[in-house]
Image (cartoon, rainbow, N blue to C red; front, side, top):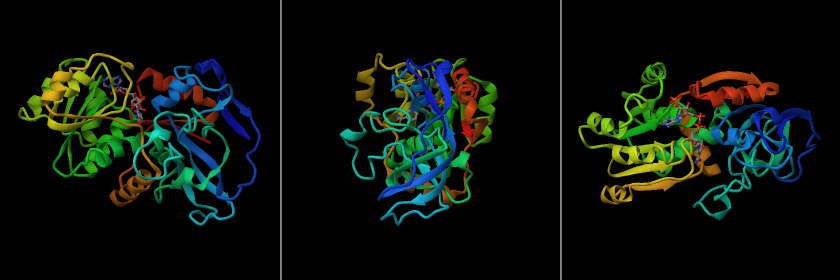
Length: 337
Ligand SMILES: NC(=O)c1ccc[n+]([C@@H]2O[C@H](COP(=O)([O-])OP(=O)(O)OC[C@H]3O[C@@H](n4cnc5c(N)ncnc54)[C@H](OP(=O)(O)O)[C@@H]3O)[C@@H](O)[C@H]2O)c1
């Protein structure tokens, strides 16, 4: 079967679409899925471009959506023909976060083979049902970006109607967060490097927008826009280069979900302000299978759909990553086959 793999030491020129062994029939507790789409995440880009070292020949991509082709003995949750989407942590079905999900050792497309392939045979618990009526490309946006936004705002942030949310930039996680916030009846302030993207963010429901290049002190601007109160929640995708502004922007007692590394992996944190404002600053990585099922129920109920940018065939995965590296995308870049 066809699969997109990366050769060590990584780099977009080291992505190859090759023939690898078909995974065969599902064993007890497993399903065989004919995969048809994946979506690009910053994490996948880091694995592909060598920013995160991985095994030679690793099949890329954490997100995978497709159709169940065969079910193994003892599987009652899925039937042949069901549309499914993969989970980021196949080893985290439910419950409290714990040591097995504190790294990417069990994550498809990093510690284990991913879903840039025609077929996968995995434990049934590595997938959930996809939202009814969604295309494979749409469903593939749930695994990483969508679920991270859901956990940040709803599971850990306890989002409720009337809350205010700050999202940074117009990538996959931030637009999913904007959509979840609107779906839950919250108001949204969104930032971007581009006025054109800010206009699109307003069309998606952002109440206020800020160009973070033109307004480097955007935390203060958020305070102005909220009459000095600050926002209830921040989905922090930037990391060290943006966290200080996010701490300015959040309200006393608010919640910052620290999820991103777009500006680097360590840096100065204004700890005294964090303490004085009694902010809950929480690192998190994606979510459990139960979180994904809850999120999908909410998506089916709300009728919202993800925002897809360009679509690429599998054998142009490297070009899809080049588009992502350019930062010109809006929402999710997808690959389909
Ligand atoms: N912890 C987790 O579970 C988890 C899960 C998913 C993603 N992440 C992390 O979250 C981050 C975003 O991931 P993604 O997949 O959504 O990436 P993405 O789709 O590639 O989004 C990148 C976008 O981020 C915006 N951006 C870049 N630098 C920025 C800055 N300094 N300030 C504000 N916005 C900035 C840009 O938007 P504009 O062009 O509009 O400026 C850019 O287009 C990454 O660091 C990723 O590793 C973490």
